[in-house]
Amino acid sequence: MKTDNTVRKSDRVVALPSATLAEQAYALVKQAIFDFELMPGDRFSEAELSQATGVSRTPLRQALQQLQREGFVQVFPKSGWQVAPLDFDVFDQLYDLRVLLECHAAQRLCQIEERPQLRALADVWLVPPAERNMDPDDVRRLDESFHNELVRASGNAEMARVHQEITERIRIVRRLDFTKRPRIALTYEEHARILRALTRRRAEEATRLLAAHIEQSKLEVRHITLDMMYRARQR
Image 1 (cartoon, helix red, strand yellow):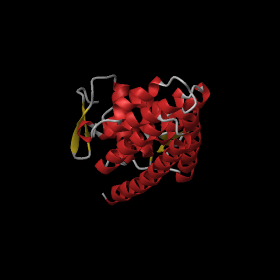
Image 2 (cartoon, rainbow, N blue to C red):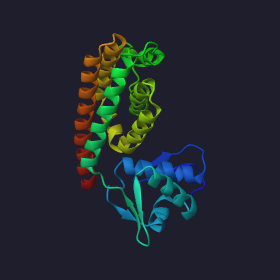
Image 3 (cartoon, one colour):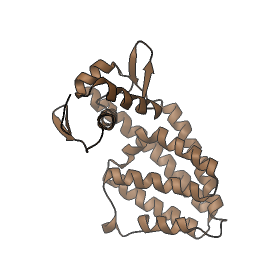
């Protein structure tokens, strides 16, 4: 078992933050899934993964159980673990549900009198190009916050809870939308247009922009995911 905070992955060394062994194992395995080093549908045993990562079985099992709760891996009694297959039919359904929830939230936001959340979101997204955050991980988190906050601001706690669950289930593909700089720039522009429509209480325009924004993201992440999986298989 490694005793420092670095782990070798393929031909590179990845530094991990100081944390418990289970947290380190969680970060490492999740990144391997995100990088398609562990491919969707791959089966593996705890012993194999323990040897590959240098993490002992107990913290590794804790990490895998957390990843299972988040939907990234599946466990099969007596036959080991599997990276959850990517089911694009399910992703399409989840994206469609996102459209329904967020468009309904946008309509409600155009009716609510006090909307301080819109001002806070404008401070993030209505900025000059030179002030935009272009870090893919930061933008992914900011993007999730943007869409989650729109739903929360509508005032329906149950709708916000369901929307958060959808966010977590599609994260494995949605995060890829921010791996290319043009998509980051377009996200800023589209979010800005949505916020301006909401601020002016133009419900029809806001829902149209929001639906188109989510649909385009769905198409982009499908294309990027399939391309990354193809490239990973060629390695």
